[in-house]
Length: 290
Length: 287
Figure 1 (cartoon, helix red, strand yellow):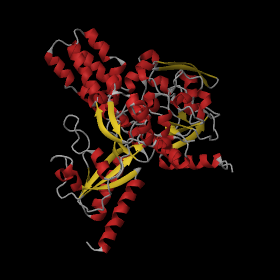
Figure 2 (tube, chains in turn orange, red; figure 1 turned 180 degrees about the vertical axis):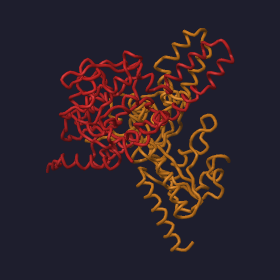
Figure 3 (cartoon, chains in turn purple, yellow; figure 1 turned 120 degrees about the vertical axis):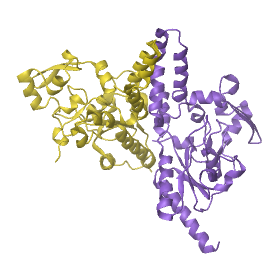
Figure 4 (tube, one colour; figure 1 turned 135 degrees about the horizontal axis):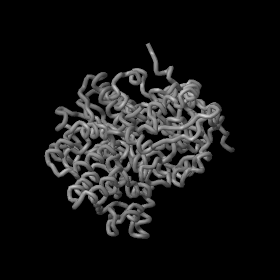
């Protein structure tokens, strides 16, 4: 590829990133499609969904507004976790690539289709696109500036200039390392300790994570307390009830209503526990406004 | 050097002009302290301690064609506050990202025990988006029924305050009441005849309003979560397997499931009191 072509691809890549930002994303990065091959098995790589895929454009957006983080009513965040702006951005990017540049493009499949496994990992996509690194807190990908972001991606046959992965891990933050040295735990481990009914544990040495433990099953029952799984559990209770009065108690409970409401309004209610992120220092100062 | 105080009236005008372009038909600002008597947990400051003003947006009422469809199923499946919620969410983002003040688009869904996070009707009345009506919904004097969304913010915007002349009862309703003892809404959904609404009008004011909230909810959310619970209760009580199958695979249960999955576009399923309301009726007629 000559210099002129490189300049042209860089310009196109920048224009596509800007389009994503203009469409609502907070950050946009690009990963090479082949970069996934090193980390995930066949069936979960971009080329498995789009033969000939060259690039993955990843869009991230802030979840709850800063005011939502401030609200003393924790339940408010249970139903305002998500506004899908990154999905809008990735769809706009895919459509733009197809209609303007004539390359194939599609939104990457991220919703679970088998158990809890997504066909393609948006967390890995974000890491490969240089947008963040895995954290001690439930493996959430933390962006160095914004902390927790939600991610979506577009896969395309269009060659774009990929971003570099971040050289430094975002987690643990310096203040977390200090706290770990003093107390043997970070803020997220303190608020949700695996050995005391919580989900998170880790060891840190020389400022680096040397081991981490995340109780995913326990976390998922909290992060997704109301919704599909809660409803399935209640259907199980209903079918096992000894008499109709017992079933009616389940059926007309507030929990039952909230589960169904969450199923119906899934997009507003995709995450219901933010406790490890509330105490995470990464991006926290950005959540303080006038 | 101290930061220069912005011209809050200009800030307010720019913000509200923006949401009017994005789809709201009315946008006003209310004093959140006027909702201070709400139950604990439902006051604006319970949701956002830094709150200084409350922006209330109204709009996204059904289209004229939908109001005029001879099929009631049309309105049953298109009533939605989703568009207003999206406009509110975008405004909240704009305030936080461009102006640096907190802004919270209050969820339109309910909190624990099916209680709203905030009384949207009271917020709309305080901001002057409309006035309470005999039928129940807030009515804007020109647009009539509108869906609402409320944004709480730490921006100290100047307040608009309530409207001076209530939209309900409309003069034609007062005349009808004087002649027949009912208004269009209490006539179509009379609480003494299996409906939800009742009340008197005296000196042009609604007094002694009667409203059967449970009955209304059963109709407005006919196919939603309550419908699902009702069918399952019947199914679990039914000893005959064939009858159980008939209930589960029947039209009512299927529509209920559709309503749940599409709950953002199927929020209100009974518009009968609003169909006959004269407030804003001229906006429901076209060529």
